[in-house]
Image 1 (cartoon, rainbow, N blue to C red):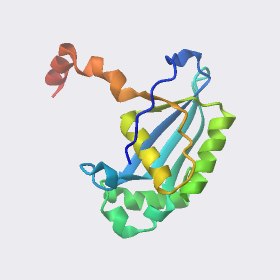
Image 2: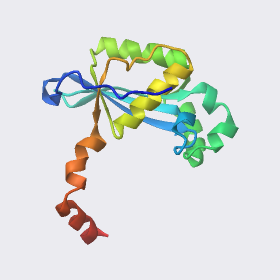
Image 3: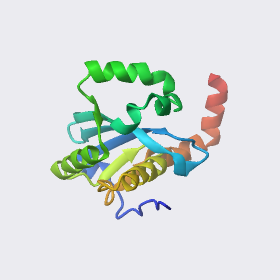
Image 4: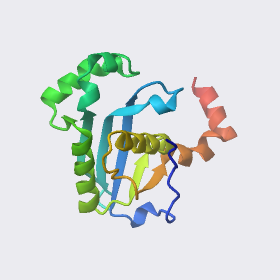
Length: 172
């Protein structure tokens, strides 16, 4: 399955938005075989831009993967598995969900806060992994009609500059 990155529906002026949804995912699979990757964690925060305030935040841990220690021990984040287990027990933001539950909850939040823009570092990757995940589990993709603001792409003019490279060399 080929995932296409969403074409921006419009120019995004963050100052005009009331809410933004920030997404960060952690995956299982092998990054050099992108088709093998699927998220085992979808971290999400909704920010009220005008008030500079976190409205809600959750860590959706994919039950099917998280409950399989073999799969989890084969991830890049295997060393964090005990920390995740502790957070599930002690932090209400961390919870195990099915794909359908994740889809329904994210859809509800997107509708409630009229989210039309998702922010992610390496957003192209996160977006494609989310599409792949919801397709794999044959459930509605709540990000289907969402703009993606990729902070890695936004940072390129800075990180590719000679001034930045010189600064990095001076601080190492």
